[in-house]
Length: 234
Image 1 (spheres, rainbow, N blue to C red):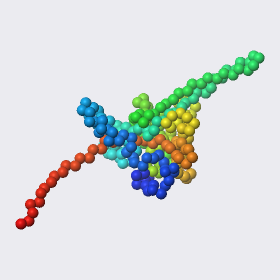
Image 2 (image 1 turned 60 degrees about the horizontal axis):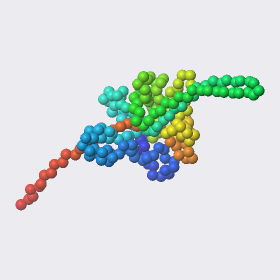
Image 3 (image 1 turned 180 degrees about the vertical axis):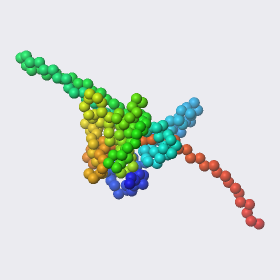
Image 4 (image 1 turned 45 degrees about the vertical axis):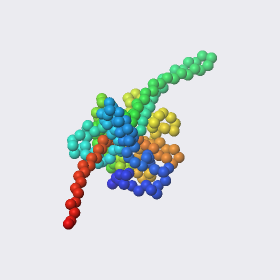
């Protein structure tokens, strides 16, 4: 049984051991900033259309989309910039004269997902008993074979577990944020070794960071009030 992170008691857990803070799930586009921009009359419509807040994708969101038959139309987004580096096997050339000269060349390709790259769910499956979403960020990809895989973890989030391979290239090296030694992601457990699945993560000291799916929500709550003055008793 999976438990949403918002319902878990994290008060006794040190900040250094928590996964992917911040604590609030609405944090990417604060509405205060959006409505401040909306004060300019000519930008009113544009500002309001861009004010959907970012929330972590949960089962409740998927159930609502399925209920309306719009799961294919739902757009999901990576929580952080993700870079997949593909290296082609080296082409070596050796020349022997008075000395041995070795030259090698190889092609390197990168696939970059930004936090604003929209993705679509192309298939649903299970991985060791956990829910698995196949998400494509390329309009030419419509099957799981070329899609990214996100598996549901214990806290309810869908985290990156599979990156598509590229024909003729070595297995991709995945980085979170930017390409660097400290940003390199490897497959590993989040909480304990007994977990069913390993996900892509970076770990520095005791801090673990991952890439998970988010969804945009435009939530507007209106209250229509009505007041009635009591006549009193004579």
